[in-house]
Structure formats: C-alpha cells, structure tokens
Length: 289
Image (cartoon, rainbow, N blue to C red):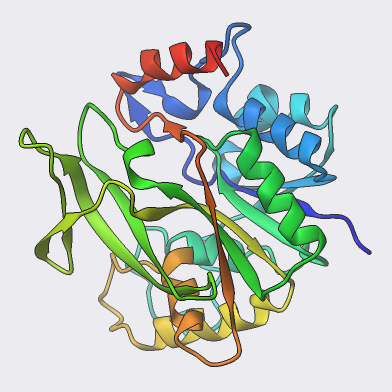
C-alpha cells in the first residue's frame, strides 16, 4: 500500500503575539518548535511524508526556519493556499481579502494527495499516543475517515477563551455531529461554558472535542470539492468573511449517508500557544513529556 502523509496547516503562520510569530516560538529544551515535536512523533508513528500548506509570501521564512530542517528527517513537499483558488465563481469575490478557511487549504492539496493522509495544525502539540492512534487507523481504516478526539478539560487555556468542535458519537463510535462552539472557558464556579450559534451553552469537562487532528482516505477530496462548491454557491459576492472549516466539511459529510468518521478518543494532553501567557506552561509541560 502507499505510505501515509501528514498534511500540516501552516498558511496561518505569521499571526503575532507580543511582537513575535507564535509558530516560531522556541518551546523545547533545545529550542524546538511545536511543529518539530509533531513531525518527530509522526515519523515514529509511521508517517513517511509531510506536506506543508503555506502562503507564498512566507515561503522563504518557512523553509529557512522549519522546512529545510524537517526535510532532513522526512520527505517534504509544499502546497500554497491561494485565496483565488476556488472550484467555482472565481471572479465573483474580487473584494475579498480574508482566507476561506481550513477546508479550502485542504482543497488546495488535490494535486499531491495520492493515498491516506492526516491533517493537523502547525502550532498544536498532540502527543505521541495521538499520532500512533492516527497512524494505526490510516494503515488499516475501518471507516471512511477518523477524528482523534481530546477530552475538553485537557484542551482549555488558563489565559482566555478557546473555540472547539464538540464531538457527538453514536453507539458504534462514529461521529454523529461536530458542534462548533466558541468562547469556551471554565468560569469561577467551575462550570465550563461557551457559545454555540449565538447562544450560551454549558459543557461537560469530559466532552470529546476535535482539535483538527483528522485522518482521511483519498476519496474525501472529491467530497470536499463538492462541499466547498456548495458553500461558495451559497454566498453573496459581497460576503468577505464567511469560512468553511474542515470540521464544517466533515459535519456535512456525516449528515450524508455512506460516509462514516471514526471518533478515536485520546487521553493525551493537548498544548497550544493561543495566548502569549501559554508559552511558559507549554515549555514546562514539554520538559516532562
């Protein structure tokens, strides 16, 4: 069989906090970045290729600081997310400057996807166990796709709110829905609350959430193209902000017959640098990994 590919969402690199680029923040004892840990854990789990999705304007910076080093460890390729790369209506959104979301990033990968593949964020730490669970699924899938789900309490920040996709699972361990929930935090009374579709909701700390760690077989690309096309066709030309995430696209497929997404829970502790104050906590946690 073909090998398995790790697709890394890095087109958003360049978002800053405290005057620095968070994806380039050294967090390991030897100055490692979070992406270094992800790639090494993926290699140990059996991945044999990495595809970085970046923007052309950060290509030089990315290769100098990350890509050239990673390419010594694993076969490395690049895909460029372009705001104008659309399956339809390419001339209708001339005023738009905002990216189309992570679903479009994966859509831009059509030319390089030739086997089973995983998708992760470039600035998240997922843990060794999570990559092993993901690789084991992709080596022998028992569903159309998978989501490695984290326990909500293991993904919160002490320094502000976070956005998460709450995973609802059926009796067979398949995703029934991914509910995008925003502004999640644990309040002083100990209850975790967030906003869903503009309304406040209470959440269980043991809810399973998507942290954008997905596994897909190649047929997802055709489905994604159809979903992304439907999404674009639903927009008015003056819409400059709507996005389609991978979770949105996956949720659309869940609601169709014949597409099953296995929910694979992990007890791994997720780490990410959402806020500048998160950095020191991540450094301390990685010392003990």
